[in-house]
Length: 68
Image (cartoon, rainbow, N blue to C red; front, side, top):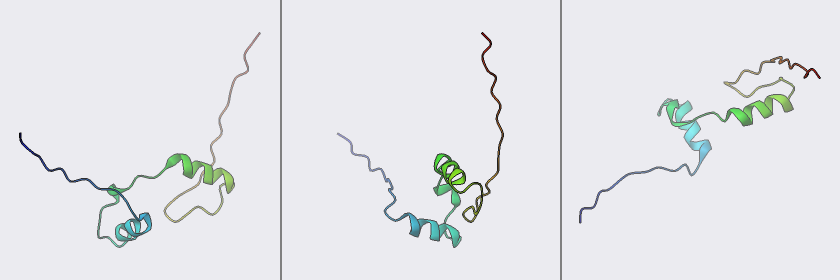
């Protein structure tokens, strides 16, 4: 029987990871923005005062009523 070692990672402190990325010590490829949470934040804040590095914008969508 052969054994193979694999290395895995899990985040234990998101703030520390983000600070290390912000300091340029690690690539921003290590994190992914949560678009759903950011969209909810944009709606809750009425598109004002986004967090640093985020832009809020307003989109208009149209729907067509079903013809009966």
